[in-house]
Length: 206
Image 1 (cartoon, rainbow, N blue to C red):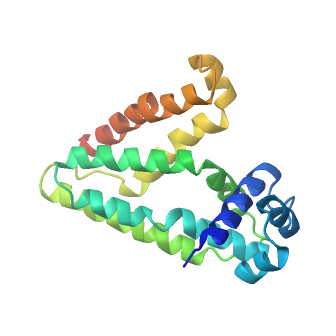
Image 2 (cartoon, one colour):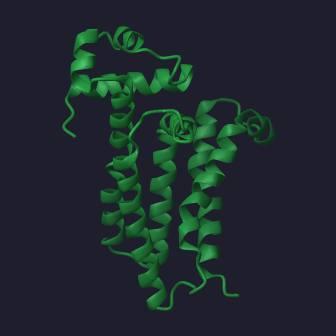
């Protein structure tokens, strides 16, 4: 998907409005007005609100596989690469948490006419890279043979989003006064906790 500056501005504006007002509560006209781009141009680029959301999802996920592949092929041992992978995923979902919020609502909506196939294909490709990496580690005796590979990414995402969807509770519990302190907690303590959890799962023997 080739994106120019105007297309990216439209996508980011749509992401913000979808997250704040919901998919149904956001119109192409609102997106156009907020982005300060002619409504005809928005329709020309994306065709419909549904196609705009499809493009947004692809925009946010398309580079993950390339990033992880570069981690896998870089220098370092398996655990250093797992740490780098988790840091990458947490940074990505924290930065794009608005998009993930949209997906969580729209993906489970059976009445929404949105094509998630390309998005799902990217997710499958990313999982394949992770699965092969873990299998290689198992073959070399680094990782346990009893790893539930399919649950590695859900464990990372689930831990992060439990904090995110209960952020007011955790702000009080952890004494996080503002967004900067929350960001620091996510990128340091939370990321470290997830690293410890995933590495424990990868090495645990029954």
